[in-house]
Image 1 (cartoon, rainbow, N blue to C red):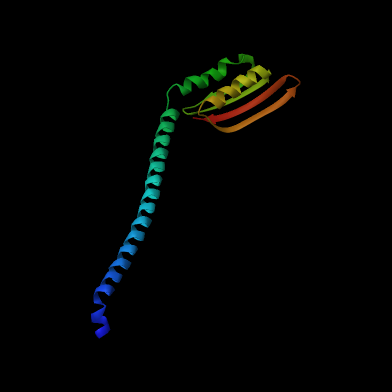
Image 2 (image 1 turned 30 degrees about the horizontal axis):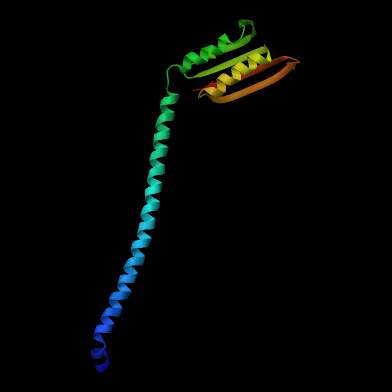
Length: 136
């Protein structure tokens, strides 16, 4: 007991030092977790904003007008089928030249169409047939 009374101040200082070191490590680890959570929140906000932009892009009203341009790229004799519904279209072409085919494919790539079916077949040397079913 004498020894405890004699070193009471030193033991108190030792315990306080251990507690301070523990608190320092806890603060450092919590700050790292906080920074990681903050990054996750920023990424989530970015993703939500991106989704909102894509929804606006997909809900544009001029998309149906651009779908009508699928009809104007090609001579009407080459169009076997052209069915336009509310938000989908089905088109069948025959005897397409490579230029016409490229125009159609470029239109599909540049716009937010969801392609359900796309069949392109080479019929002759410079002639292609195409089936297309897509939504927007």
